[in-house]
Image (cartoon, rainbow, N blue to C red; front, top):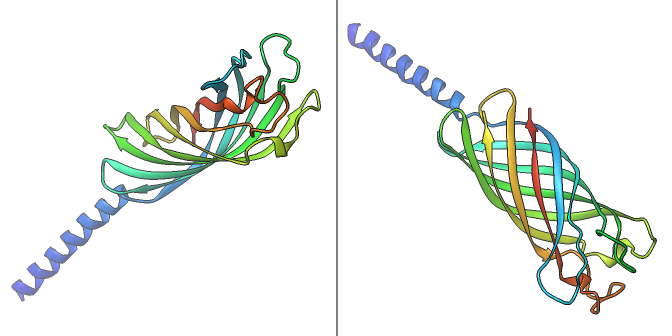
Amino acid sequence: MKKFLLAVMGVLIIMTAQSQNKKHYTVSGGVLGGGNLAELSKDFGPSNIDYGTKLGYAFGAFLNFPLSDKVSLEPQLVFTGNKFTPDGSTTGAFSGKYHSVTIPVLLKIHTGKNFAFTAGPQLNFLSNIEDENNNYQKDDFNKTGFGFSGGIEIFPHGRVTIFGRYIYGTSKVFKNDVIGSPTTGFSNYRHGATQFGLKL
C-alpha cells in the first residue's frame, strides 16, 4: 500500500511539474499598433528624387508559438499606411498614399523577462494606392514584395509590450514601365520602414 501511495504521489508531482512547465510554453496572441516611418530608398539609377521619411500607421495581430523557454516563433498580420511625398517639386514623381498588408514571421529570442530580440523575413502585399496627381495606378506598382526585419521588444512577457524594428525591403516598389522610367529611375526604389508601438 505504501509503495502504491508513493507511486501515486510521484505521478502527481510529475503531472504538477509538467503542468507548471506547460504554462510557460502556452501559445499566445494579441493585437499591435503604432507608427510606421516609411522611406523609399534608391539602390541605383539616375534618379535624384528624395522622398525622405514620412510617418504612417501600422496595426494588426500576432500569434506566438513557444519553441523553448527562450525562443519562440511569431507570425504577424500587419496593415500599414504610408505617405510618400518627394521633397520639392518633381514632375512625374509619385506623390500619395501607399497601403499594404505585411506578413512578418519573426524568430524571437528572449534574453530575460524584460527584453527580447526579433528577426525574420516578411512578405508584402500591395492593397491600394492613392496618387494625388493621378499619374499612377495600382498596376504601376509591384503587387508583392519581400524583406527582412530585426528589432527589440521591452517587457515581452508583460500585459503591454513595447516594440521597435527596422524593415529592409529587398524588392522594387515600381514596375519597370511606369511613367518617367528609366530616365527618372523610379523602378530602382525599394521600400523600407522603421516600426514602433505597443503589443497587447
